[in-house]
Length: 188
Length: 188
Image (tube, each protein chain N blue to C red):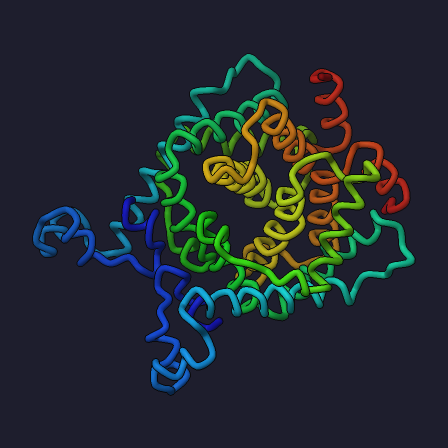
């Protein structure tokens, strides 16, 4: 994580991992078949940690729209608390072609739960009928951008600015009726 | 551009630039004071090329909302035609702290023109009253993401999918009345 978050993927090597861990490089291969296998493991772990943080905040008794808004807030809090985890996921997914090679275990229940929420949203016409990956992009990347901007004092961290971000994202992903509905119940 | 687009900023060095250009490293310093100066020049050039492509598509006689939608379409076309330019800008701006050190000449008239359009949008209550950088983020990053996804065959490149992206972004940045208005005039 430290290497990926700081230097990005092009700068990553198992040599550097071994050096930083203070072990012979050959020992790495006891745990991981190769570099790709190691990167997959980092990807699993970081996405899982992110998903657990989001799912923990969800209240299954709430309606779908509320849960989507909650997922944005929860992810923002996570990004502020664990910037290195987020930077690692960003480093691993920055290159679309490389991202394609990464695999997530179907067994990541929390991640599957978020995916199911989005699928349900599309089926129930709450979310726009676009590619699920595009919806997921909107639910994550602008949140990370905003959180990193706050960390770097480029964006103000006020209840209003956070609320505005959520509103922008909800407007992007929700169908017009669902957004109007959500706005009516969240007047402020 | 080639080095930044492929290897990102952490992997960039003036040694590599000189090698790729086939000139002694010392010669680089005839043109650029130091590495930061060189990166600034790359940033200027790439952002300028991007801005020129967007501004060329704008029709000043159209209303502000139409121009914003046009800027999204124009940027998408640009990203599809010039992926290396976009990847370079992405590489330079991925790290928020580094981005802060980059400077753009006030003399970049095309870039200033886009900035002025956004400022006017906020003043006229067409755009949400959020940080200008956040508005600019929405007008660029998701477009680049979508374009790179299309290039990698992860997203479909159809008039519908492109229109949906524009709608999502317009919903994110426009105030509710402005979005409703725009939708009414763009029923399809």
